[in-house]
Image (cartoon, rainbow, N blue to C red):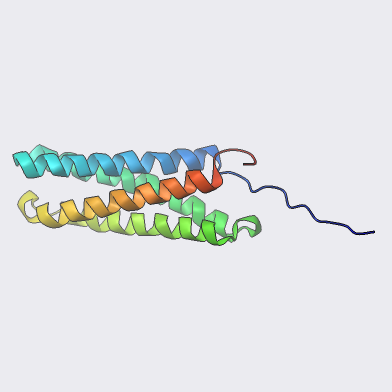
Length: 142
């Protein structure tokens, strides 16, 4: 008699983790759009909007990164896809942090590099959100 071990399907992201992950991308995107508006109009308020939106994206992505790091330690989340997902979140947070430091300068001094960092942060946040939702889903078994 042979026995077979059937692995249960992987768990999805917790709904709060999905909320944190899904909230980071629009905030970083809003920061990018505010940077684009500042680069075309040079109204200082657009740079202020970008700074606050980037900080909001840092809060959401930082909490999602913390959650992912805790989940990475657990035995059922030690796959390479979840490791890549956690690395994407870490890269998003680091680029967003340096973007926030760049936006802390005078608006004229922050502009070329702030815009480039905003584009990179949006691309990384989009990739992390895509991997998180496409590979893991939300809620129970996928």
